[in-house]
Structures are given as C-alpha cells and as structure tokens.
Length: 91
Image (cartoon, rainbow, N blue to C red):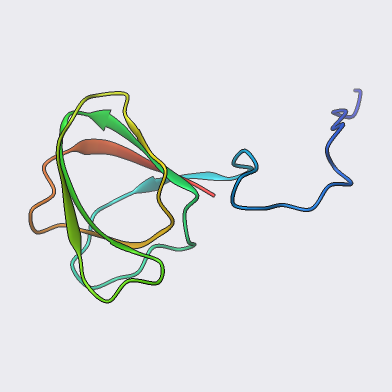
C-alpha cells in the first residue's frame, strides 16, 4: 500500500484554500454546525436559511439551483425556511 502524496501538506489552511473536510448538513433551528464552513454545496434545489460566522441575523438564499456552491462561512443552517436538500458543508 502506498501513502497518498499531498503536495500542499506543508501549507497553512486558509478560508481561500480548497476544503479539506466535507460533511453532511442536516438543517437545525438550534444546533450549530460541527465546524464553520468555507462553502456550502446545495445538492437539491431550494432555499437555504443560514447565519454567517460573524453575523447577528439569519439570511435566506432563495431559489438556489441544484449543484450551487455558496461561498460562505456559516455557523448555522436553519431547518425553518430551508427547502434545499442534500446539503454538504465544506471546511
């Protein structure tokens, strides 16, 4: 078995760098995401209600197409008002 070669292993992570972790997001009105996102992938079309990392209020992204990627650092994705499904957080 060979080890995976990672040419970028020595580089520091940043918000502009590609995601190194991906996780399924189940919208929830109370629970924070397990980690702040760099972006959010929308698998099936709809609306997404979220709170950005340093925001005081929620915002609604309306009519997102399937396959959309929101470049947003989020801490919550709310169940109320979110109609998109198959949502993936990228961190």
